[in-house]
Length: 291
Image (tube, rainbow, N blue to C red; front, side, top):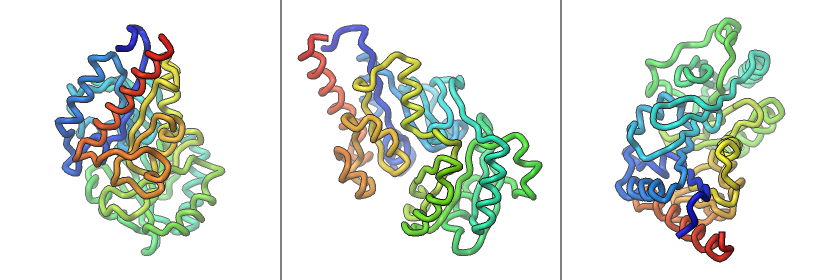
């Protein structure tokens, strides 16, 4: 067993990694989270969901210590949701991005600043650019308002823009190149149709990886004492930052499976498998060093 006092952190993505297809935490995942807590490991969940939507998905007594939400734009304690860190897009940057989105005719959603980032304005663009725009809009209709000219709505800044496009790699690459100098461009796969691309636009520097880096800095945890597991493109920043201790579930996109160690699917205990493998490696490494 590792010596008392050493600090560790294990971080898991939420949808398709911690939560199964029915948005439940499988028993095997609950057990490993409790076990890690017994070992004194800090447990973090890292998600693209807003804080309010996380609250709807996770029980307050879930065995979790921290939540990194909105793809790294915010960090809070759990339970309770005490906000520790947040990022906002300035009015100037938001206005520039809005003009660019409209110039291309893209469908998008403009999420309000944290902690109200579950609420959003929306604008429907050209038919080709809608992707699964309507699916997300219908799912969160009570949180949405149509965007007017944008000037009044943007006065308080934003947390992010979310752009939905068809699963077209060439189109995504062109749009990524267009926006990358202004904002952080984070790709995710739509949870609604499993094919469309969600292009999330955040203030520069925002990502799951940078948020975890901030958190471990605050907690005094070394990078080589962190393990992570994910399943989609928006996990890449944290997977690459902690690459030697990173895992993906086996129904992740092929590019991720080729780059990182693969564990079972969420439903078959993949997250728990990753945590067990990582913890076993931590024990061996630090027992050998006598630390």
